[in-house]
Length: 298
Image (cartoon, rainbow, N blue to C red; front, side):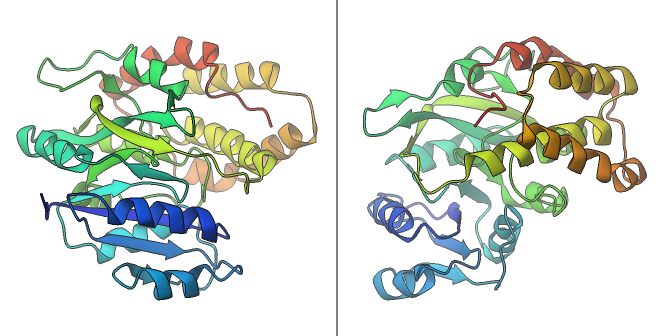
């Protein structure tokens, strides 16, 4: 059941063993997708292990840690109409890539489909799945599932040409909630994003992660996104809510300090979204406030 429509893109940094497990799972997929890995300057022998054990994989070694921008490099190398992102600690379930490509083939204004995520080793649903399933955004009837305001890069298949036309992931945001800005720019260009429960990704969370640094970047990037794209009122309300509710610690202080330091470029590059797109973002306000899956803790 080979399927030539989709390339799998993975970024990694110092997670050799997790990456090798993921590549093993991807190699067993019946779709036999081409796989491109961007090694973000790992120092644990990742690149050497990939070359030795998975010579079929296209390996990119930019020589420095590009964060999410490493995905941009890989997408530019791809020669398929669709791109399936996954992390070095996640992998696609057999058949899901073909089903995702079928959905994108069928709906010309659909730019991305996000899969259900099962957390291993127990196979339980990730808490974010309930939020995807219950998305409050009103979309057109032809969508194959609930309309989304953003996507999860570990579990989404996108159109390669639309991704590149929108500029890919921002170098400024680096890594941590980087999907929201790109998703909003895609929506501004007239695209729709959807949750597709018939697709499945497995996630075995790596223990090799700096959760505090990820929280700093996630909070900073959320603040930057608000002031880059949202009208004054919603941006201010979101900022004040975060200031009241995030932990009062050094990590939160650092995130707000970095956000403030970036204000000159944020204001230079600020482009407020049209009302229809802001309506989608506004519909998510309550879900964001009450979310148990997206909390700035750690």
